[in-house]
Image 1: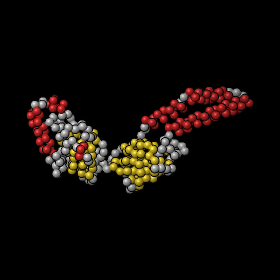
Image 2 (image 1 turned 60 degrees about the horizontal axis):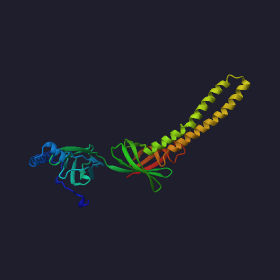
Image 3 (image 1 turned 30 degrees about the horizontal axis):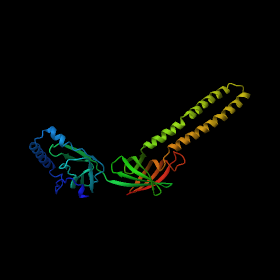
Image 4 (image 1 turned 45 degrees about the vertical axis):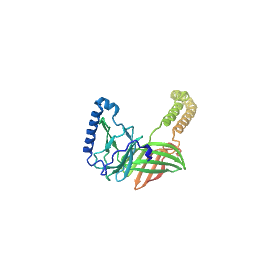
Length: 307
């Protein structure tokens, strides 16, 4: 990291923060109280000058590995960060303009989130944040027909982000809901704002004035055909035949409108749903609602690997 970006460096314990964190936090609080007294700050003034440490976290702490994480937010120089968890050791840390960056060594087999505590200098106000535990993997799914999805999947997470490729060209980024028991999985692509707009326009086109007129005429023809049944046999057949021809024409027109609406709302690339199996590092199954499918309900096979 560029040292010019570092605004403050925290004291690093050689054995990690988990060991003796509470005494260390207590000593920090005592020092903060003494500093408030020296500066003549009452609790309210101290709180305004040294507010609650507010951060957000993006990423995961991977068990059995050393992971660098960022608690993103504006922190006062001298803010103390640590944890009472015995499952993690903070081996390196620093405050930067972006927040607190730490290198964590998480014990293998750790499953529960790791709670980090942040204590502001002088005011002594504390806050905490939970770091989710899990290891990220890359799933590469290749759909028959040429589209490819590169997905970032984290152990235990029910959502994943990915990017669709057509050939070697990246087409669009997408988010997915993920459900898996380790042997089988399902993926559902989340609807984007663009999807909603395309679907809305497709529905408006289908339900517009022309669509309403077609539906009304179908209703009229159905009623008239009912009237044909009251005619003498010699007149009934020609009456039904004449109305039936127009009704079939309208139904074909309506079916074409449905297909046009489905095409407008269909995905531009890839598939919106997946159902498959996990065999070690291999993935296999079928995609639904795929751009390469001739009809929306057609299943398109896929294969994939986990890296």
